[in-house]
Image (cartoon, rainbow, N blue to C red; front, top):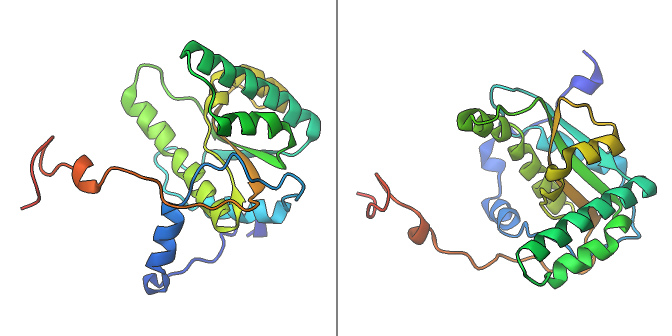
Length: 220
């Protein structure tokens, strides 16, 4: 069997999991748009390690249809950053809202980000078929989330953004992505530089969880 087909070794003993560390990583996986190190390059081996972890994510009927496009070329990044800036600016203008400082900080230097990772899926969801769409994206987005978490564990910051998914044709033409491939999220990645990541204020589980039916009381 080719070494390229071998999966990384797995921890089979669940007792080896450190619940505190796992919960901390999950609770502090924030979007990082500032305090990024634009000078430090990302080693290809590190990104490949992260993708090897990400592709251990659960998948459905589509199997291993995930593909990852890493963009590190300066000219390509500049083109993509221009599209991203245009789409984000249009969104805030349409909503008649001022752009957040963190978003401004990101687009001002997006072209300088060490790498952009496009998480793609071979195939297309069926239009007007909600069940198919849930299954299709449910087979790729867990891998994208796992990728964000394993990047976080290595001190690499990113932000989950799906804005460019509205520009499938334009981005595909820049990156030579085939027509039968769906772009989902793009993760702009860089090592963090003094970013302090902590849990966000969220509603408590008791406020958002129902038992045995919608808005039914507490567990028996």
